[in-house]
Length: 283
Image (tube, rainbow, N blue to C red; front, side, top):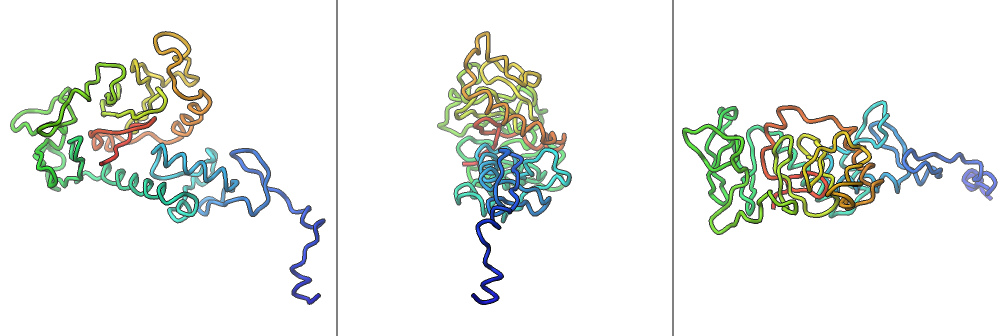
């Protein structure tokens, strides 16, 4: 055996002495090669747990910046885009980039979404007049609407809080969007009034805009009902739709995130689509 071979050779009893590393998510112990280190904060998790964590956040559209799953991370690190790309499938990565773009539009005072449910293109505002309501004409569907309230353009009239945010093109019907029925697919967040669409999933909704938790069926606040006792009695009994444990874990991850600023709430008056969150997804 050569010197080089001797240096690389490790008997089985030596391998057994290698220390195992603990994953903070599943609490399991794994060898180093089955662990992944987040470069920004150097926190270490088993590769499978970290992959599932990232996939879940992308699937649910919870955050565009995927933070370290350790709530006590001293550096409050987040995963870089190249790290995320190495973990998830191409379809998930495409969705993640789309979520990033939507977030950029949401925070840009000079851009807004076309409120038509069949268009939802990105429209540009006049930079010098972003603080005032202005006429916006969508370059795709030619719809004219108010930049402030997203309703049809109302020259010389003040915006009204109760004006419909979703605007319909000729031939579209608004009956699908009536929010009086408990089974209606689109309703307003009871707190910030942003429109949310529930495609499927659990009855506990958390608004992407203001982080308010509420029951989809009766709109009652769930902010102080962490254990979701609301679904143990009354007309919403057994209507949660998911296991209680999974929903509580989901909600815990959102509570740890900071609430949006007043500025971001001002720029989010557009239709939002969601599974368990209010998330705007252009078509």
